[in-house]
Image (cartoon, rainbow, N blue to C red; front, side, top):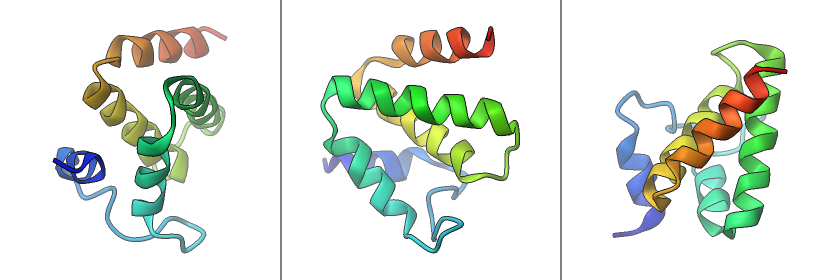
Length: 92
């Protein structure tokens, strides 16, 4: 099954549908993270979680991107790494 389609289908809330706040289709971000190697993906996850924590708002692009990273970690079988990043950054 296509990796992007798996991410898209994992979202039952519709948060990956449409465009982001800059008018870019959200599917582009899903394609980006699926194409990253593990190191790049870990860096992207850290960056997005950190930005979301700084803003603290659910209605930002960082929130749905953070959820996309979580679903991608699940798909890759590395969801524990996501939890570690999240916990580490929340403690700061």
